Structure formats: structure tokens, C-alpha cells
Image 1 (cartoon, rainbow, N blue to C red):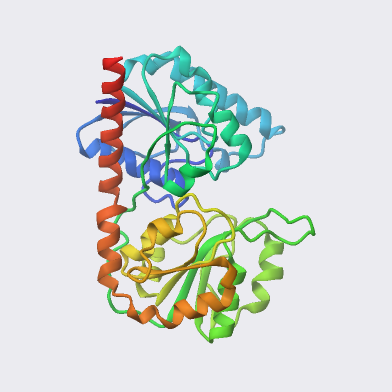
Image 2 (image 1 turned 180 degrees about the vertical axis):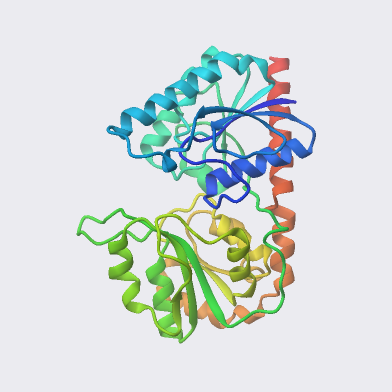
Length: 367
């Protein structure tokens, strides 16, 4: 197949990238190239994608650009140019796979292109998102979990395709140390009372460590230093440790993250928000590490209760997390690994997208 992959301009696509959306885009492209497909990518000039043709739409990603006088105007100008480029060259391909941030910008030109457009919805649900996606019934929307799909009441979701991770990087290790692991983002968003929102639930992880006397390793990207200084730093000790520099971008490499996951007694997915997927859960289980997570979003789809970890009712709070932690030794690391290699590997994800492309092409040909 001749496939046009439309990447995001916010971040570059490279083998080392850790941010979830560009990482998934990279894995999809790499997998398609390995299968012998001809892949062209619209993206940033600093992207590195072996085997694919790159058409740069901007020299460097938005994150790496010097500050614009008016960021909204500058970034939307590039996004419009990207959409017009799809309109210009889109008919030269069998399928177009859209991953742009935000997803709906490129759909504005969908009626002007004969080639079917598949658009993966990477972002969390919100009502305005549902509204705008519903305006483009001629495109094929892909959700990344059943829980994610069920939230969309107006937009028509064509298919669910789970994300996949590189099981070679996140390799298996049976022997564990005695620490718990939490990785995530410290959001700069605030609640109405002025307190920091904690969508990834770092406060729950700290409370669990304190009340259970467990060692806890923490790391992630800090969007607001005040959040870190107020809600994390005061609780750091010889048992609760922050790994790596405190910065806006996650500075740990994939091998460093994998090493932390391989040795952890359990990975904590103590989220307060509705997680569309949760790559970190798949990564941890791929390393043979069980997951303890609140039953929000896709957690119950990734974690097999009692076999690869425990799914805790948020109403039970720390007590529920402690109860799960007391049973964590019953989980077999090999079961965690097998679950991911079967359901959430890069290979499985790419195979499922390839099948989805062919199904859509067949629908077009038979219409």
C-alpha cells in the first residue's frame, strides 16, 4: 500500500521519543515500513524515520521552536498549511492516516480528497471534542480503547485499535526489587479552589507509600514547578525518591525507564482522570511487573484482575490500594509479559492498523 501518515507538528518523531502520541506514530510507521509498505510522512523537519519519505512542514517541532510573538496564530498557520498539503497530495495514496494534534484540523479538507482518511483519536474525551468530530462522518475514526470509544456519543467511531509498545525495549525480568514505581505528568492545570489538578494521581502513590511503609520511585515531566515544590518535594525521603532531573520534559531514556519498570515490585496507575489507554501499564507488564490501578478509563482493559495486577475501585482510595498491594506477590511476572506480547505489542498494533486500512479500502472499492 501507499500510505500517507500525517504526524503532529507539536513534537518530532524519532526512535528515542518518549511522549505517547509521537511514540505511537513512530512505531506504526516503522512497522508498516518493515511490512514493505511505501510510507510518506508529513511532519517536522527534525523527525527521524528510517525507511519512510519525510515531507517537512516545519523545520523543528513547536516544542523546540523559539517563542513566537503570537503562538496561537503561528501554530494554527502551520496546521492550515499541513491540511492544505494533504489536499494537494492526498489522492496519490491508498490511505491517509491522521495523527495531528489536534486531530480535527485535517478533517476540514476531507471532502476534497478522494483517498479515505483514518484518524486515530489520541486525546482524552471532552464534549466539545465529540461535537467537532461528529461534523466529519465521511472519515474513519479510530479509538484506542473500548472505554474511550464509549464516551463518544455523537462522533461515529469506526474501530478500536489498541496502542502497542516495543517489547524488545521493555524486556522481561522475573526478579524484582522491593520498590513501587510511579511515572507520569505533573499537570499545570488547577482546580477551582486553586489547588493543582493531579490527573495522574501522584498524591495517591505518595499516600500509599507512606501508609504501607513501601519504597517508592517517582519520575515524570513537571509542567509546573510549584506543583512539584508543594505536593511532591516535601514528601521525598530515603524511601520516597524522585528519579532524574525535575524538568518540563521527561529526561529519562527508554532504557532507563525500562530498567526502573523491570525491577519494580509493582507499577502504580493511581489516576484521577479517564485515561484513554495508558502506555505505561503495557510497558510495565511487558517487563513482567504487575500494575495496581484505579478503575478509570482503560485500566480494566489493560490489566487482567488477579492475573496481571489489580483494578481498584476509586471509592476505596488508599485502603483499596493497600489491599491490592498485600496480594501483589500472587501475580506471576510471566503472565504479565505474555498478556502484553499477545495484545499490546507493536506488531499486534501494526497488524490491526493494516487490517483496518484494507477494510476501508475494500469498502471504498465496493461503494
